[in-house]
Length: 168
Length: 168
DNA sequence: CTTAGTGCAAAACATTTGCATTTAT
DNA sequence: ATAAATGCAAATGTTTTGCACTAAG
Image (cartoon, rainbow over all chains, first blue to last red; front, side, top):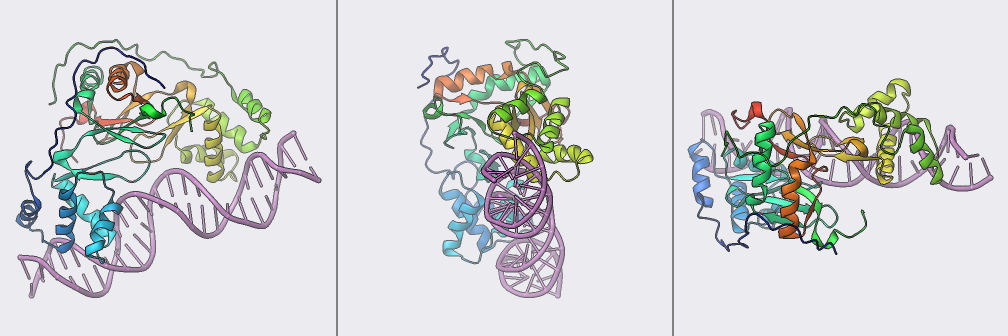
């Protein structure tokens, strides 16, 4: 029970606008495949399936999660192919990866990227609005000329439920 | 983004109080060894040397750095022994580790722990005062009941020199 | 003596790479 | 036909673990 009541926040958080279909931003599966083709790349089954998996849900998924999902339909797609394609799509700007703690990286479409607060005890990942980092961004810039990228690495700590508990 | 002159900062940063001898906080090498003994633990060469290495400098050092240093004097100390002892000393509260990016973890005495801003391009690690995170701490608590631990994982981004440059 | 601690080899884990083969164009 | 992409095996880098042996108490 660590229900402090801290100072009034300096901004308000609009809960979670249910943007169910993430196809609006700039790209759908076919659009990205077209980009690939335009660059001299080739449209393969592995690529199409990977993009389908990424577009169909905005969950945090690791390379292994994605491999498992893809292998249900195309069992021969190797995880090294997944990694190579994730890299390629990241270079293209279609997706980004984030580190939520000690385990493997998670991948999502750039259009749904966000920061995270991750509990180092129970592992829960809270999706944080960028406003939460605005003050830090301003101060880091002012004091160190440093531009933070709060989406790439999560901020660790203790979630509400775990904040009173033992350190392990 | 990339705002050139941000708002006036809300706190001031006292440069770096030259606390040259970190033996004050709670423990010197022999004090920690005594703690270990009190717990039913044993004082070994590997442990003494590891503590000496940790107390003699407050740099960010990886397990491998520490192993190299220790092996100059005691070549048979194996890195797995280093890891086991680092874990043990962390459980004891004498030291902590931090993740500054993709590579190996770095270890330091708890008494000199601090947060970091790490450039994802050139890798430079800026030691940040805790005040920098105060606003984020308050807002994360207010909005999510989340208690941040900004020392465990660095905040990534772009340092002054790298902020204009190409994304790779 | 007793058992905590060690050294070593091997495993675990996430990710990358070399290379011969397949396949989209 | 040609070069991009793939599958597989092997290597990478960091950390952990099993186990027989050494040494601190």
